[in-house]
Image 1 (tube, rainbow, N blue to C red):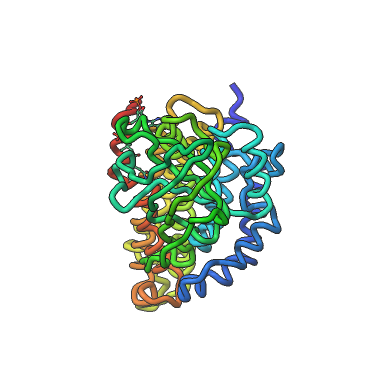
Image 2 (spheres, rainbow, N blue to C red):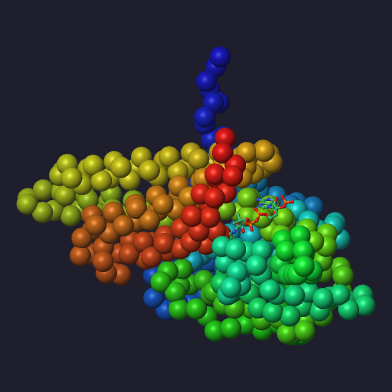
Length: 381
Ligand code: COS
């Protein structure tokens, strides 16, 4: 058997990585520090991503997008996160918000919203509520049938890019007596009367990406806003996460790689006791362990992306597993990068402390790593 193409990324993905890295370094990295420091939206990244077709590259060609596959999206997010976590949330959130539509919507609905997403109108995902986080099906936001319309009341919490996005997938209760079988999915637009937003959360990391509550006060929409069968919204929401937890793994991978690259370079520049700190075995062992962890997480994440694309039956396991591994790796690697830089790592002159703060969230959102382990245990190979 020839091993020419076995366990090798096809060249087109390497080319894609090179072009995204170039864009990220030139057009996103220069603003990453200010975006974090000033808690401001990465507008420069937003504009650059729209211009280069990377704002929502996953949108299918028939809906006006690039039709980038799951592995390409992972590489895009990874390379952006390598320089700016907040900016990497733009393509990640747009995918999370629109996957329910892609999986559950009809052709007319897909064309209506996906074509606008491809042009730069963002899409957020509204599942969590103040009292329904890990226990997602305990959500209380209600959608009640009134004649031909649905009337939505309630609020959603921790919504990434809330207020920036034009469209929101909202998972709401349509029959409380049925529990997770009484939940349905809708698309709500920012311009719909009755939609409003809370103040931006003051966060430890990802400070450039606004996280706000979204309020629905008698938001009245026609039935063509419903993108799941009545009562099938929770399964759709969970199905979505099986595909998108991989993008969080990608983000974690990028943060880890970014911190590793800075730490490796620094270890050759910094001299103590008359030599580069790289020459000390204690530092070499740290860098070696960091590189092993990053590469292991990358292999699992890319395998999961291929499974997402193919719709393999073991996707649930792979997606939860890569998110868990990559985010734990990101937390460890970024913390070790701060350690290697010593005092310089602890101040914001270098990006590693920002990457460490950003990494923490990857262990929490799109399902805590404790929830991931529940999903993994329920889907053991
Ligand atoms: N894909 C499709 N359907 C799924 C599913 C998945 N991945 N996971 C669950 N479902 C279905 C189940 O099959 C079940 O339907 P049946 O009774 O017909 O089998 C229904 O949904 C309820 O599932 P379950 O009983 O497993 O729900 P639980 O309340 O036990 O919750 C967890 C399951 C904990 C895994 C879920 O609530 C979860 O993922 N929580 C974390 C939420 C999260 O990630 N939030 C982040 C929001 S985005 S920032």
